[in-house]
Amino acid sequence: MHFPKSRKKEGVLHGMEKKRKAAALSEGKGRKINGNPKKRRGRLISTGYLLPSAIGVLLFFVLPFLIVVYYSVIDNPISNQFVFFDNFVMVFKNAAFIQAAKNTFTFSISAVPLAVVLSLFLAMMLESKIPYKSQFRTFFLSPMMVPIASVVLIWQVLFHFNGMLNEVRSIFDLEKIDWLNSSYAQVVIIILFLWKNLGYNMILFMAALSSIPKDILEVAVLESATPFQIFIHIKLRYISSTILFVTIMSLINSFKVFREIYLLKGDYPYDTMYMLQHFMNNTFSRLDYQKMSAAAIMMAIVMVIIIGILFLTENYFGKDVEG
Image (cartoon, rainbow, N blue to C red):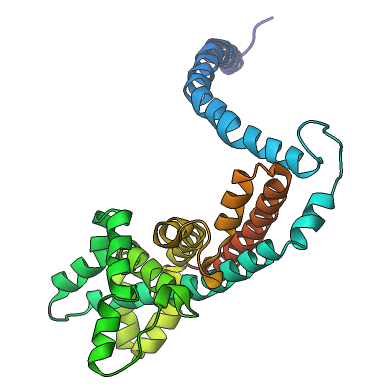
């Protein structure tokens, strides 16, 4: 039986197509089989590079934190009897802890917003054409280059009872003030904190402001937007992530102010300068690990809540400009 030439041609083409598909399928399987060892080796290499860092984090961060949690719920390291929340209740009733928490809260709620707002204001000033711009910038960046002990020495010369500021006051027949042993003590520390941190924050804001798209600002000017409207609706939204970062860094640095206060006044400063770090340090020197651990956990919980609120706020106001 003879078939037309067209049918024979179609059969040949169909057979060739089947062979091509089979060859492509076998090639794909080969690639898949040959590709697995390479992927496996790449994962092993990546794991090898990450393993030292992971071990370091576990040993120096995760494990100590778990030990602190354990100490906070036992009566002492010898008997190891679980007391659950008794240590936390004891810390809450401690007068020194209440005083330290109150002072730390007052200091942070005052110093951190001032550090963010003033550094942003300084960055915007340096964006404009003002005289002596380089000297102005140097004044706020100099604390980053000067050791903290030298900065504290400058503050002692300025705010000591027989220091420079009181000498200036005596010229105008004003009474001397013991700045570091009076109600003005925390104001002195806030000024020191601001002078130390404004320069770094100012640089971050200058970088953020310079990264705002110029065409958007030009369109806003052409649309007759006022400088205040440009700042609120454009600049503030584009630098929201930087504001979050500066706020978190300033908050962390506000908890580190113990170093400056310790160099100025030692373990037991004036009441308004007694911070949570003083409480921790003095509790550790008495080997009262349970009380110290409970206070550290409460402090960590408060920090996590505050930083979580800041992240949610930044996500709400800055989500429309994130690319």
